[in-house]
Length: 232
Length: 192
Image (cartoon, rainbow over all chains, first blue to last red; front, side):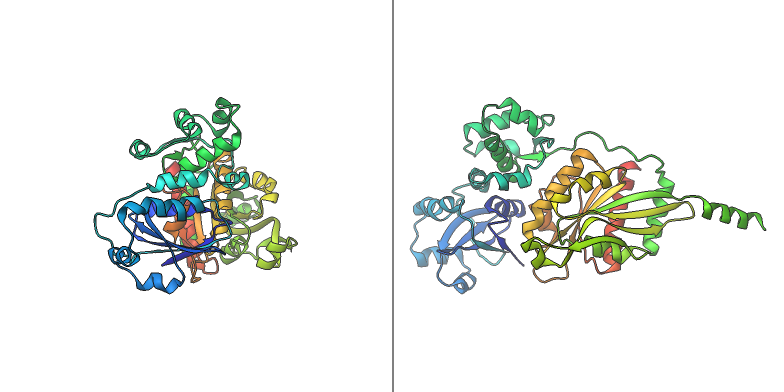
């Protein structure tokens, strides 16, 4: 099933986040005004990028080793290709994307040149203040590490600001606390780091405080409400 | 008059206790329709003509203060459904309506990923100020280009949070009931 949207309002880190979390094979197709690029996804990582003239070609050529052979791409050239068609385009907007999972057949030994988490961090560094505010929308947000954060961090190259933000994540400090601790680092850089780490699944939001039971709400009343709704 | 009859009359004159559930979500997510589908009264709405260019192209009228629907639980209790306005420029209403809410259903338009961020902002807002059980209703699941609920969950970073994402078709009563029941079960789990 295909998912589609516009990079202008649903930028790269967000679509990459969906790819990373789904951990599936597939293709992300991005149509910019000047170029159409197909990104090949294996187990939630982008392992190859290919500019295309005809979109239909993407859907008829499904065997990945055959595609590399046909394009005469040597494995040692893949990092350069990804640099040109993925990393250098992460800040480009005005693109329409469609994401389709499945149908690409891989061998088992295709290498992951750049972990998807690294791509997400790179993309987050290029977000505008308005885009960042959409997600880091509240200075009371509080984060902690995900279960596999250590494992992921081992393979990533963080900027000095991202590194400092990681050191301050403790499940208690709010966004406001982290911004304050890193002053005079510009807030936008701190927020971009938080955006990237959150999108890459390295940190997660924690709930502040316990939810309080509303006054006058008994379990018996709650059961009656449930029964009433069922009977509607 | 029999004692039972007397009691009934006494109860009907007594003001009923109100239980409040909020129906929130971005602009054009289907909040007014959601309430309309399940409310036992014709919902009270405060709709005005949309004026902003982009909004005008999506729908002609929008909620500016709140929508209000009702379900009578028994002689003493009523469940009120309050719909918040979608645009963030009306977020002062979120504050007014959020106080005392039992839980919140946040609807998103599954066909429009551009609005997912607004849903995230609403989640962040309520979690920081009125931390009550929440459910995300992935509305418009009957449309062909709808994102499936599990993808919306991934897009909203909800895979690590205890906020369920359920498929919704706001025009379908059974679907609306299911979303409401999921929230009530969350509340039961939280306080039970």
